[in-house]
Length: 126
Image (cartoon, rainbow, N blue to C red):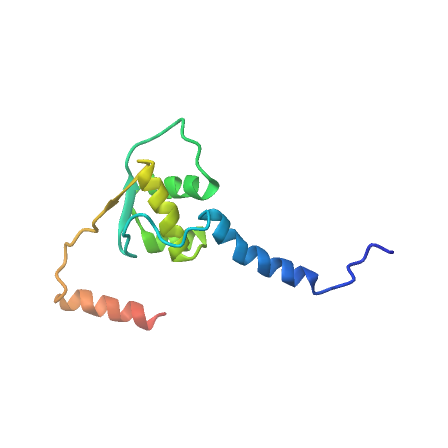
């Protein structure tokens, strides 16, 4: 045997298996977060826990939230994970008292024409 892969498509199968297995492994098979978190829920550092060892994704969340609260949607995007998987990771960090959810500030009312125009411009740019 010359060591070449008898199935050149084997790498594609492997990549597909890794893509579907990784989120399952990250959540320990769980599909529902322990806390109700909306996409707009902001997460902030609850307490610095220097002795606590976090998974790489958890450590990345802590680094992202260290400077300012971040929304669940933003954290999922920055982690490059499905939102549901990110919510489960965030719920674990809440249970560990590393993160705490906050309600985003409501400085503007929903009827402000400038706010509505800014939202419309943002949607059109998508």
